[in-house]
Length: 272
Image 1: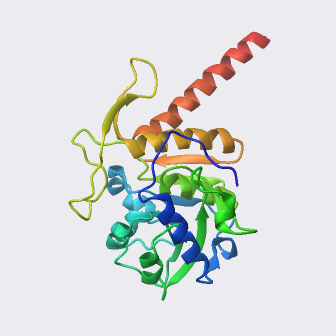
Image 2: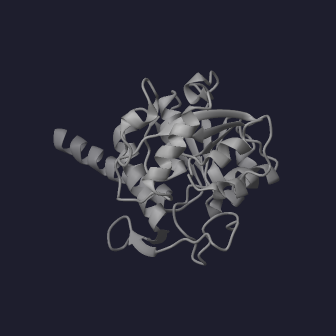
Image 3: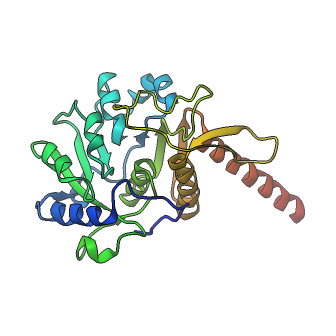
């Protein structure tokens, strides 16, 4: 699987700790994500992040059969009577457990090998599958031979997109992928679980010309924008994206369509 390049990002825990986590996870004898027979091409799939716009699209989301919850959004969905078919987790910090307290046997938990052993212990009596998050700070040999390595960048959102694409899905519907803050600095449809969790540095950006709208983004959101742009380059001929909710990524997609249309019209004009 091709690694997705983006802006520079740092891991939540030291690389040495990630390596120890991966070695520990590989010794558990867990089923691999590639063994999931239902994680294959078929009906449209909803990939759900926790952006503020999600709260306005819950009723629509309930009409989807195939749903991937991205990490921390899990409990918010369950609280709103939405049981995701899959929940994908990548965060090496055990803080992710604060967001998956409402586990159930109907959801398949796709846990990255880099996650803390505490996370694997927590899911041991549930439907758990392992996957490997490949990145530039980890050599392929760390994961062992004949392993499926999934790229995707610095967030679980873009990792989930790449995973869905890798296993054949092409009609991808994105919920809660705002990738920016609201004007009143709301970052998710729900609050952080602890006071220690912070957004860090906030930057104001423009994705178009000087007259384009401005977006407030945390560093990880900026990274996700770069990663999504690269995903579009790699998979543009295979994937169809539909955004439900606004934000930076939806605007980036709209801008891309506009530029492509203008280029097509210009080319057609030259050929007459």
